[in-house]
Amino acid sequence: MNRLEQLANTAKDLGCKVRCDEPMSRHTTFKIGGPADLFITVYSMEAIQKLYKAANELEVPLLPIGNGSNILVSDNGIRGGVGALAGEFSQIQFTGDDCTIRCGAGATLAGLCVFAREHSLTGLEFAWGIPGAAGGAAFMNAGAYECAMESVLTSCTHITKTGEIGSLSGPKLGMGYRHTA
Ligand SMILES: Cc1cc2nc3c(=O)[nH]c(=O)nc-3n(C[C@H](O)[C@H](O)[C@H](O)COP(=O)(O)OP(=O)(O)OC[C@H]3O[C@@H](n4cnc5c(N)ncnc54)[C@H](O)[C@@H]3O)c2cc1C
Image 1: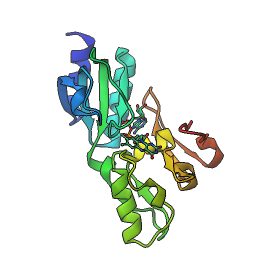
Image 2: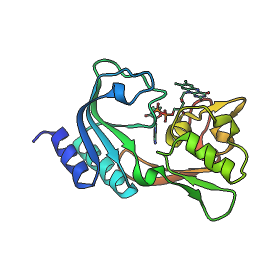
Image 3: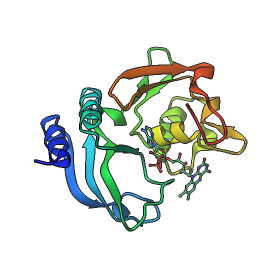
Image 4: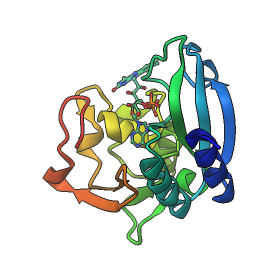
């Protein structure tokens, strides 16, 4: 069994959906891009942690993808895995107080804007119309109308390539023009 097959089996055992030779044209706004060796949809934090650990040990690259609105994939496709987020990563809720939202990286930015509006929170108006997921928007520090994610993002939980969970807040997020730490 080769390393890709091993990673695919691990992902399936973790409850992920695994597609082989998945055309990336199905997952990019511009509808271009050849096949990803593995396209893995991950549904839980526990699964993604174990998946990244396994990918690291097997030395298979794993590219996170959001809504595919800021990536161009060549006709040659992507060697290794692409990781998409669903399930618990799509959740949007309050953290405990009434003015701080906790949002999964797989939720759409549009969904996040609607949640904020429905709860009479201001700050995300600039993001309406940006066709990304919350994770992609955080990663890119997406912005418009002289505002950007850095004006609303207070902290972020992340996972490293070796499967460690960490958290960054405030200046440690390192947010600059279309860039974060
Ligand atoms: C019509 C159109 C209008 C746009 N308007 C704007 C605009 O006004 N302002 C603006 O800033 N951008 C704009 N964009 C660009 C794009 O929508 C943003 O950059 C958006 O934030 C990308 O989010 P995404 O989820 O689609 O990311 P993707 O395109 O899927 O990924 C972008 C990058 O983020 C990484 N990434 C994605 N998700 C994660 C994650 N969960 N964890 C770690 N890394 C991740 C990917 O590996 C990749 O490097 C526009 C794009 C289009 C097509």
